Image (cartoon, rainbow, N blue to C red; front, side, top):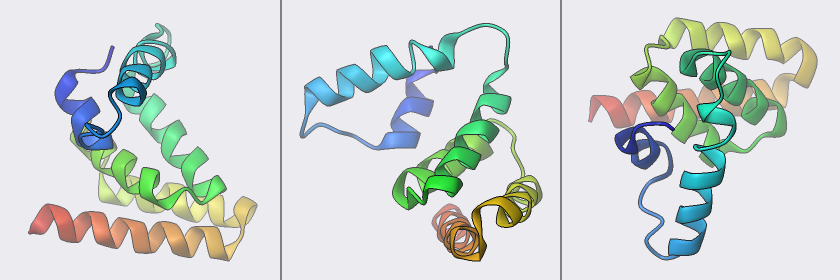
Length: 109
């Protein structure tokens, strides 16, 4: 399972809904994120790519922050965005660029 600090960093508090928080922590982080075979950094790349492709920007920002805490660099995220621009189109790529800018600003603050 992902360390508690990473779970909190990725999703914030979720105190408004303890059942949703429990589901996310136990089922999501205790399920696919905890499986052997792929390291967490790779799973983070996959998740970032999926969120770019589906334009789930709020979750994308959270997973960009989590990915960076796992050692993914800004340049690597930029490469993922560029790679996906060819497959998902410019609008998805631009939303990802804006998300990355907001993440960088929040880290610098």
